[in-house]
Image (cartoon, rainbow, N blue to C red):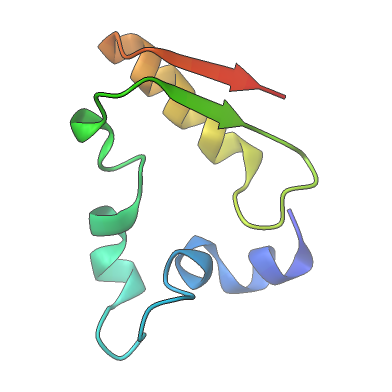
Amino acid sequence: ASDVYKRQGLGYYLFSGVNRQLLNPKRDIKEVSPYHQRARIKAPLLLIVSEKDTVVDPKHSHNLYKKLKKQGNPVELVE
């Protein structure tokens, strides 16, 4: 993960296009995070993971993949 990611955290990127005065990353992250909204995911999903990704730490994609597989969702992971 990039130095910016490590300094700012996941909430920084999830809320980067949103008025931060309206949302609180610590409180509202569950509302926008695919990991926390995984029960609502019904469509087949393709996750593309790279160690060079500066937005999403690869471990988050791997965790989402495992949870979706466990739920029986159609999901593929490409590294």
